[in-house]
Image: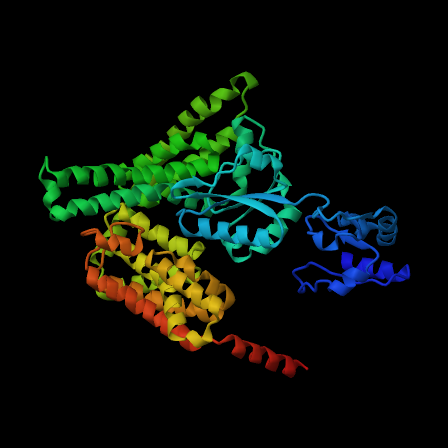
Length: 561
């Protein structure tokens, strides 16, 4: 819009004008050296622009809004106030500084890939950026108080709840890691345009929970799963180590196998459900929700309600704690007692009583029936479940459908049902492995960048990081996604058919080297390889080279003409 109105205003003034427009709607056509040399005046309507190429010219720069309000007056003012740009000057109003935080439920793939995408894109746009990753190993490249103070905008690309208190008073924009990974430029531009000042100064429980209302149930669930995962990984692998001494060795008291089972099974796995429920409640109601959530989760575990009961307890505790925080008035002098006395007491009572008398029994019955069905289902039902889980894992590669299947597999580990988790990981390795195989089988159809991406994708697939296939899916979704879903469905079906069981919810091929972490290991490897090869071969056949795609676009344009 600014380009159009300024061009018309310049024409009305009798000026000879050349225009360079930076927009996603059309490619940028930079000024030639001849145009810059002939120019008597340079007008830059927009901030954070590199003006070094105009050194020695008369330059006027401002925000874009005055150009839209009164374009003719804006140009006349520019002609009067423009100053010669010195060679040392680059950006007259200072380079835009961004800070960002990325966090996904597992803290492995999306966290770091979205951070890399934001880093590279921001630098390409001429912005300074620092990205903090809140991954499975904690915060890395942590933002300092000085980083935040000088930032023009804060981007929070997170699928779980993160603490925003330190960004109080800054312009903050929230989005998902998937959006930041797939559309980093749009994310940055939207953040700069739409970020709102965060008001997080209030200390009362009712005010501190206001921003929690903006997150939906799905995000609360993912927050709980994120905090539960370390328990599951540690517990599962320690249980697997106890099996090194024999499947029944842990039953003999005083042995190392028994000690390992006590650590992994009786401790780590016992904490899974309370941690899941506690951090679902934390995501909903902040710290006051943790105590009632964990108490409800422990009740769910003791009642046999499993992970479904834990999810129910987490939401009961979270929403009841938030209701108490926002709806129960107290004198200012007693406000500080709400999060440490009133909310934990009443929310724990409510959650506990509902779990014992209302929710616990029916959910325990559902979990028991599900466990019996899964452990005794015939091969046909097992194959169908494997197909479903495999296709879900490959549909959006780290998106909501993928995470739903993953959470289902992880949740069943608490019930000692390990086969679905094996199918989930087998299928989750397929997309990235398949893309690597495709770039090897049909090298001529892929450009140099895609072939390099294929090598990285294959390595990520070995590590059970499905997101390695995202660059391919983003460019060619109608061919990549069906290819991945077919391969994933096959891997999941074969895993279930072969009776493979997996005690740890992550790790890829590295879990294979831990004795008894995977049962039917050789057949499990066959299932993964079969799925990956099907995906790779299918996409290598369906893939169109850049030349073919260009020819197809030209044919479409000819038909339209």
